[in-house]
Amino acid sequence: MQYRMKTHPLTDELICSLLEHTQTGSLATINPDGTPYVTPMHFVYEQNTLYAHGLPKGQKISNLTNDPRVCFCAYEMDQLLLDPNEKPCDTNTKYESVIISGSATLVKDIDKKEMVLKKIVKKYTPHLADRQLPANMVKGTAVIQIDITEITGKYYD
Image (cartoon, rainbow, N blue to C red; front, top):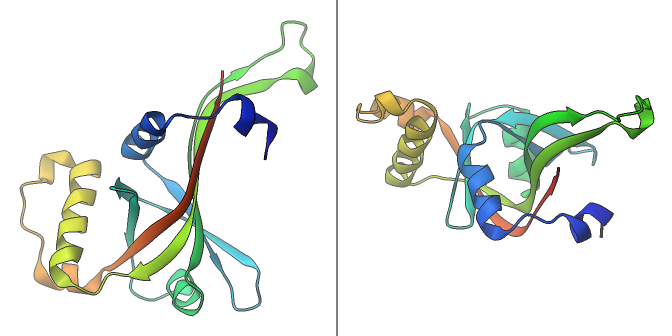
């Protein structure tokens, strides 16, 4: 276990809070040759499940279709903590981060896709949350569901 995971773990409540308000995260999938592929994503977190959306075709979709194992990272950097003696190697960062491991699937159920997409609209553009989503957009958007097997969070201040 990483040293900071032992000394600076985020509580479950702080993990939820970070995932609820952080604007972007990075989704790591596995290429056919075993190398990682990372994509920045918008997302929502609900009841120990993470959802993201995007185009229905592309490298991340192909990757998770071939191998559903994924990792997701969300973090917020608050500020640099400069050493009072101006030693560059003693500069640190005040931050919070969450790392999720899990299994990804594409949501096929149209009603569930629409529900998730409405939650994404509410998170990112709350002033548009009462608008109807066009059926063709719901149908044509990939919604990725990540069932979480492990979630950890840490901070430093």
